[in-house]
Length: 434
Image 1 (cartoon, rainbow, N blue to C red):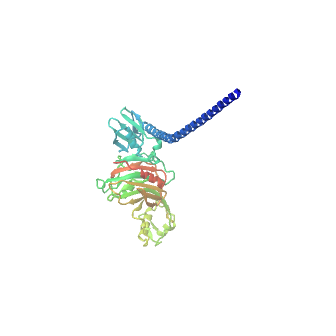
Image 2 (image 1 turned 60 degrees about the vertical axis):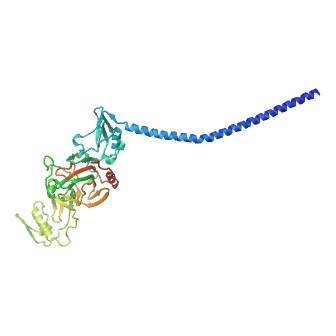
Image 3 (image 1 turned 180 degrees about the vertical axis):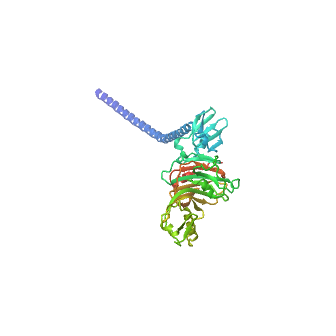
């Protein structure tokens, strides 16, 4: 009996122990689920916060990078230096930047906004900011700060500008204008502003610029004061190109020396007409059939041409527009019978009514015997030249006296026929402010 009682007691203890274990296990599971739920809740709460924090970190990193990059770029200026023009004998009369600013960084900003500026000098005592197109860093004194534009910021178009601004006589070295890559193809572009038309040069042909030898000019490179275009041609017969303002009216003349060969059969109304000079006589039939030396019979040929002009039939008049014409500078007769000539011409085209008091962009684009003329950003004229341009290797003479009262800006040269896009890019480089 006692053994059974003991066994029952033991069994009750074991059952109680097992029940306690089950309860403990259930309690642990419950706690575990509760913890898991709490963790899931915390996780779901923390996820947006983490994303926000991560986004702020990324944005902060970008801002910091931009700030550091911008600061480093600005801090490339040098203390105790100036940005000085390389050629002080041919310095722009008015630099692209010449103003008072608050600090060197504002001075740099001005240069970055100006395509004609490749470097600046800032005087920390006077707050004066000056920028130039073509210069170099030179060590000076501690109150001067200098900065040079990185190469990547110098556009192709801004680098081919020969002269940023001038209102007086200037010479541009021929070395800055390479010979055309393809013969007869090149481009000149510039901005022009006429300030006052009626002044001391009124009634004279006024020089804008010309690319030509100047041995016929006086020691100061001044041009003859004349209202006759033929006298300008005699004095400057080799221009590639020339730009002039008319004596009395605000018309712009673009001229260029060309070369042509002409071959045509002479039609004589009276083959047996005799043409005589002080030395000898020839029949028109002789001029038509024989090989006549053009130099020895020059007077005869001139009389014959005059005779042909006088007997020209109706409807044979020159059909060229009044704004286009040419002057024969030199003529060499090769074969009189077929009238084969080699002629040197000074051709010109006139643009009427150039505005006064406002800036005007012009681009002269030449491809062999085709001359395109752009005004502002539009192609306004296509001119058929009589001959091929004769390119030269001389300097560019700008505003030789007598000249106009006004300014020239951003004179540029390309040794090839420019594309429409390139001309538009040149037009976008606005002239410096007066």
